[in-house]
Length: 164
Image (cartoon, rainbow, N blue to C red; front, side):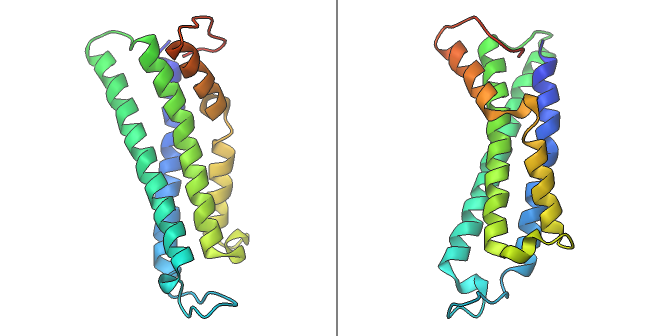
């Protein structure tokens, strides 16, 4: 049933919002933060921080692109009053897990760039990190399950062990 793909995308859509907010918070606070035990007086001049934030932002952009494509595929099926093909549904299921993985990895990079204080209960980044970690563990969002389903379909193994 195509609803599985829609339900899974509904679960990862808020993660994209978490990613955006984590990046906004990082861009607002990190640039002027001194980098402890280094010569860098501001994180904005630290290559380590520049690379970490750029990599995180790139992961978030990749996640958004996958989400857009998945939504276009589902919308195309709805407009044609047909279910997407099994291969498309398998790819969407796979991409859903990849979206969650990209978001979790990107937020982790931002947490590292922001330092240990970002894990404090009073820091909103801690809550963002926690919410993304939890949401990324839902059964519909599991990257491994999505990769298994997509791989089976790509290789012609029709004995699916999960719904798409």
